Image 1 (cartoon, rainbow, N blue to C red):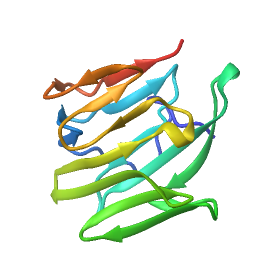
Image 2 (image 1 turned 60 degrees about the horizontal axis):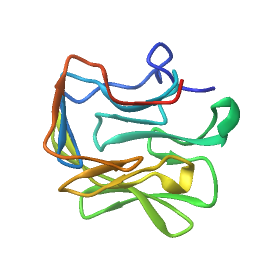
Image 3 (image 1 turned 60 degrees about the vertical axis):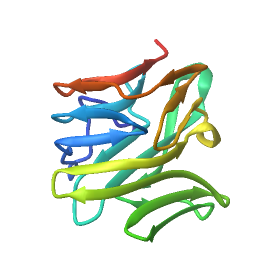
Image 4 (image 1 turned 180 degrees about the vertical axis):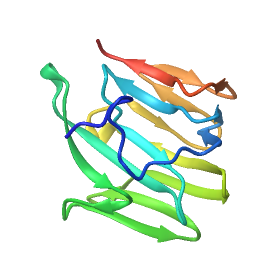
Length: 150
C-alpha cells in the first residue's frame, strides 16, 4: 500500500512544528511528494513515528514500504534510538535522523534519501533537492514542501 495525502497511516498524527534540515513545516504538512505518493511521513508519538517508502519502479512511480511506525520491514533497514533521536539506516548508511523536541515539535537532523531512489539530502543547515538548496524556509497550512514528478 502506498501512502498518499488521502491515504495516510491510521496512527499518523502530525507535529505542529517540524524542522526539516533548517526548513520549517508549521501546522502539519509533508516534506515531499512524488506524484501522489508521500515517500517520507513523520508523525508524533512517544518517539517520532516514521513511515518511509522506497521507489521500487521509477518509471511507474511505484513504492514499497520499508519502515512503518518506526519499525523496519526489511533486514537491511535498521531503526534505532541514538541519544534521543530515531535513526534509520540502510546497510549501515544513515538515511534519516529525527529528534523529538517537545510533544508538538521535532527536528530532522540529517536526511539522505538517495539510497531509496530520491535525490534529497540535508543536515541541520540546509536541504538539497535535485540540485537546488533550501535553507531557512517556512511553510504553514498542511501542504507539501517539495513536489517531485507528475
